[in-house]
Length: 198
Length: 187
Image (tube, rainbow over all chains, first blue to last red; front, side):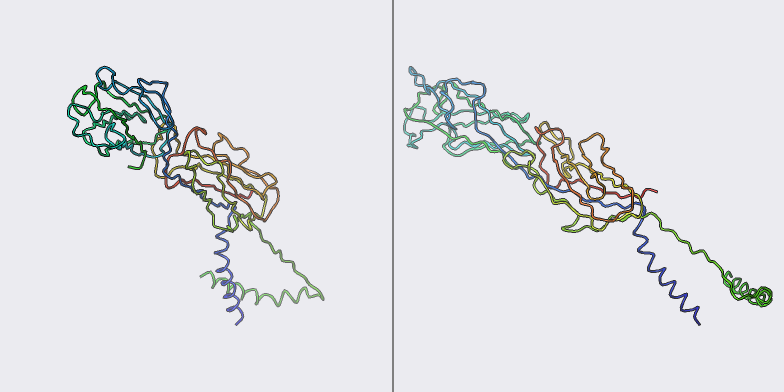
């Protein structure tokens, strides 16, 4: 009569002991993951003159690039001008550059109506070339219509370094025929550079 | 089959016993039985306490520069109640934090990995530590001469962009590394 219960009790202990024993071994190991994330970041520093390459520009005043003499004093046609600029920048992901001209050319800053000035240039086209991360792209603000215009260029990898920008006005640039005399006034445009997700 | 043989064997002993007892009966008799057992050398890594077993560093980069943050940290994780029933060795190993999704070779100026040092302290007088940037890690294994039970604090520190501080980590929603702590009984 005793043997039966005693055997049952022993087998019960064995059943309990097995799982506990299975968790122990001469070697124990714990793995702890380390996790983090790096968000998409594009950063640009301030614009600076690139090596002093200025032709017919006075210089850079803050973010303003001022032309020294916009027209030829004898012909009143646009004089050539160019400036090489650079911006220290970084994008840590594939991205795009967007160049945005607020006026699509150099237009009178007072916004006056000039369409009736036949024979005169009322706006000046210019071009902008950008070099960034092995990508070179050009953008022309043709001054045909005063409007916001933009160009977009894809960059397929992260880039860190100097973004180089060359702004140029061709001799005789005009929206009223080649070398047309430029109507008196103050001309300007705002060119914006965006580094942004595609 | 075996059970039947054992029962017959027991019966035979009972039949023979009376005659033997009659021949050597004394006032006192004794028998010695050896009781033996063994305790195998075992180790347990203990139980993780606190906020789970992940070192979550959050955002890796300074979003104003793109460079690795200089204030990266995560609370230490504690393996509570770890034990080894014999002399033991604690070993810590770690893998670099690496971008999970950005697997291509990063362009100039960027890196997809971050180095750090993982340390396990509390088990041996000298903490075991493993630097992922090091070519060898002799301090990664430390030995304790006796059985021990206690808590092991595991920490990560000294983060640095793999390849140099002039590089920036590429954007990725997930960077992942792994710290492994091993307790081994030494026979």
